[in-house]
Length: 367
Image (cartoon, rainbow, N blue to C red):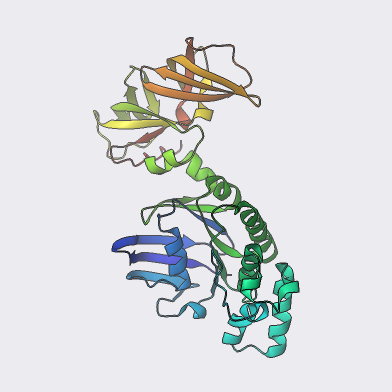
C-alpha cells in the first residue's frame, strides 16, 4: 500500500485556482474521504495524485518519491472514474487487461489476473462484450476491476452520482469496506455525502474552495471543529452559535459574556485573545440539556420554547433566549409546550469559541 503526501499543491482551471496550496498527508492503509461541495476541488485533487491533472506548483509524493514528472500510468495508484472511462473499441477483457499489457506482464498472468478481477466484480460473464453493450452498473464494475488488477498502492475513487445512483454508491461502499478488510488498502474516496464520509472513513479531509479546512477522524471534526466553516458544516440540527464578548482570560480559561448577560468560563487557551474581543460561542444541540440549576461545569440560560418535537425516544427543542436561538436534543419526553420558559444547561467542556476570523480557540492544556 502507499503513503501519499502533497506539499503546496496548486492547480488551475477555467481561469481560476482549483487547488490553492494544498498540504496533505494520506496515511498508508486508511480510508480517507475527500468531502465537500461539487466545486471544492476534491476531484481535481484525486486527479492531481493520479497524474491526470498537471499541477502548477508543489509536490505530489508517493511512498517518499516525488512523482510530479511521472505519467499517470507510472504512478503506483489506480483511479476509478465516474462516469467510467472505458476504451469503447476494446472488449471488457481487454479493458481490464490494459494496464497489465502496458506493464508488459506475461500473457498467462494477464489472463489469470483479469478473470480473477472480473469474477471479484461480478462481470466474468461479459468479458467478450464491448462497453456499449453493458449497463451503466456493469461499466462501473469493469472500471473497478481494471483498478483491482493493477494491485496498486492506493485506490482513488470517484463514486457514482446523479439520478438512480444510490444502488451504485451502495455497491461501491461495500467494495471499499471489503478492499480495506482484505488488503488493508489505502483508499481515497471523494464524496459530497456527509453521512457517507462519517460512516466510511478513518479520516475526513473537509475541503472548501480549493483549500483544506480540517483533516481528522470523523469524531474530531464533530467534537473539535477547527473553524466556523467546519462547525457549521456538520450537525442536524446545526450547531448553536451565539455572539459573545471576552471579559477575562487566565489560567482557568477564557471568560465570555453572552448578549443575554450570562457569563461562562470555558477551559480554552486564550492565545492572543484580548478582553473586549467579539467572539462566537458554539455548542451542539445534543450537548445541551434541560436543568433547573447550574452545576459547576455548566452554564444556565433561560429561554422561551418556540417549538417541540418528540420522535424516536428523543425530544427536539427550539428556543429563543436573550443570547439568541438555542436548539436542544434531549433523550425521552419533555413535559413542556410552546411559550413555556425552560432552563438550558450548556456544558462548558463542550462549548467552542471562535475568534473574529472564524478560527477556533484550542483547549487549555490539561483540560
